[in-house]
Amino acid sequence: MSKKRKRISRRRLAGQRVMAHVPTFHLETGKHKPVTAARHYIAESGLNSPTVLNVRRNEHTTDRFFWGEKGLFSAQYAEENHFLFPSLRSIVDCIGEEKIFEGLELTADDWEEIEEYEYAFV
Image (tube, rainbow, N blue to C red):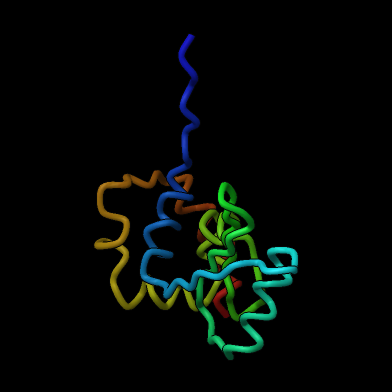
């Protein structure tokens, strides 16, 4: 029996498109846990937000983090809730919603949900 493919939400796909314009850094965990390694790297490098950090735990596992103005988050959370982060919103404004979200066909419900959180940009 074939395995069902998991459906990715349109909101997350939109976030992935926005995050594609964010600089990405790759690092190894070393002796630390992935989130600790990411925090040490941010402190040592003096990274500015927004940034995506790919932290390699071992040869099979890589953890992704988003360094934003509000702190360090899971990259998946940042993709799903990209409209909550002012730095990602500025990327959308700079490039243009039509260009980034072209072909996604976000529904009225998706836009209503995004507009509910509009206060986060203030």
